[in-house]
Picture 1 (cartoon, one colour):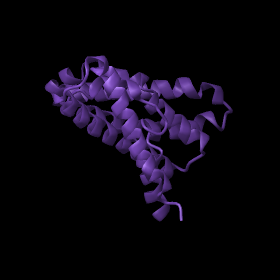
Picture 2 (picture 1 turned 180 degrees about the vertical axis):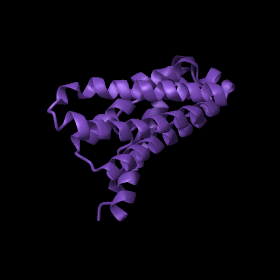
Picture 3 (picture 1 turned 90 degrees about the vertical axis):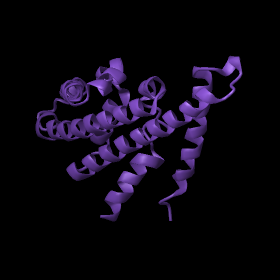
Length: 193
């Protein structure tokens, strides 16, 4: 049990998908201008990442690995992720049309989010068990969502700050996300005893 908690903690904070592995920077920069959009994207990505990890692990373990079809792994995972995103998009459109409009193009772009595909491929590369795969994907998704929400809050405050024209917009956003990455590096010593 302790190893599973540590796995989730490590996936969320120590090896954060955005700040530690530098995956998923597109939605991080695109959706985090408003806090509500960041929360919605975080929830949608959490769902997609977890379901894609479960389906990807199952397909890889039961179909690709036994029949030595590893060369089809990437395309298979992309199809799984695209199907999951399509389902998520339909649900969000039905349940919350305002969130659907707010997320705009970034919701279907979860399909090409390198963080989602990266986690699915990491699960296979690390040869994780089914439970470990689910918890790792969930922890990574929680870490992804956490960074989106923190960064959205910081960007909302930055919008009110007096930033020099040279740094206004994306430059200050990249500076802030790099400082956030440095802050998350403080978690890297935790768990080592």
